[in-house]
Image (tube, rainbow, N blue to C red; front, side):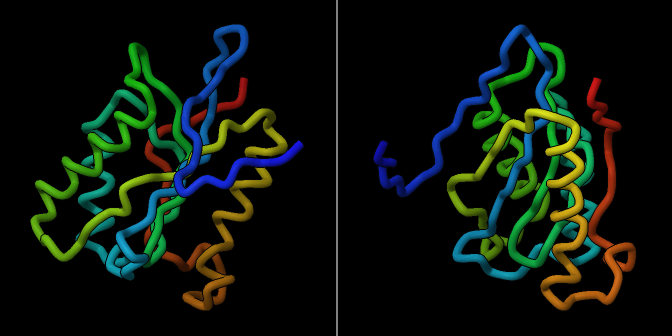
Length: 152
């Protein structure tokens, strides 16, 4: 079977049997400009996610040019694409630096087991080490957990 060449990722989180999914989300800056990894941006992102409650942000890591986060829909959630667009716009209104722009799209993957969740978290957690930003993952200041997303 041939795969279609796509310039943008396919979206839409399918959840069998009304499961509440955990989604691995990646959002990049426009042209991969490295402006995310600073205290001001980190604080603004956390505040924005705490107010944009249609989806809940669990563990996350903010890299200089992209964000990895684990998210899960809240009660009466918007479609994921709408929520991502919303929090990006809210962040930009608060942050107010027009040169700091987001890539139009994002990547998302529904995790299908706690093993995949653990595997992806290990990858995300070690991202700052792989990029030579810190020696140990726990040293990276731009990471955290906002909501405890449990695999039940």
